[in-house]
Amino acid sequence: MTASEELRALAAQFFKRLEESGEEFVFAPRAEIVAAAQTGLEDSQRGAGLALPGESLEQFGRRISGCTRCRLHKSRTNFVFGSGDPEADLMFVGEGPGAEEDRQGLPFVGASGQLLTRIIAAIGFSRAEVYIANMVKCRPPGNRDPEPDEIDTCRGYLLTQIEMIRPKVLVTLGRFSAGYFHGRVGAPMKELRGVVGEFQGIKVVSTYHPAALLRNPGWKKGTWEDMLLARRIYEQQGGRPSTGEVYQPGRK
Ligand code: URA
Image (cartoon, rainbow, N blue to C red; front, side):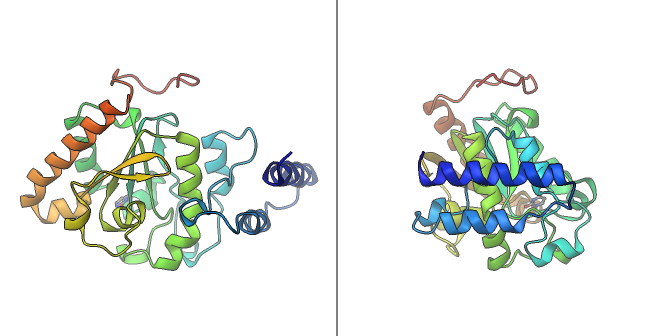
């Protein structure tokens, strides 16, 4: 058994005992164990591996939904984990939930979400066939930008989602996710669009955030070009053709 397998088995035992004891669920200790075990990993991988052995994406999301690791939990209504096909070949990553997302507990369901749904449809997919998540899972108050430490604290959840879903193409929405997945935090969008990046073997294509597109309708043409690029890379990578169907477990 490798050290990390041993650690996972220990953590699984710990959580089983915790569940049997009926004590209140505690998240932080395991996160700390994982963080300690991950010392020495490449920066782009640190934070992944938070799912328990055998845990499904949905179970993982439910387990972490009471997270209190950063200040954003204090003002949230709902933890917004993500939605869509847990085996999707195409994944979208935005910034953080807005007011409507916070209310419903689902990503991209407000005005910018409706636009995102149309963008996804324009390249031939339904929302149910792709996976949609955010850099941070709780709404930054007043729709402010997420702070670097909030992104950092939440990042393990997103990395674990990516690790479980293993999409073939990741489309970043806006400068926060683009900067992170291209390894160029803070870089302007104009330097990241049109560049096919790679993150842990997954192709990365970046486009504007739909909320920015609502404010700047002139960016539609650029978005369309980005999405065509994403679609082309998706096909090159052997992404499943759209069936118009909803997720069927065990298909990938
Ligand atoms: N903006 C985002 O970045 N994510 C959402 O879920 C909604 C709006």
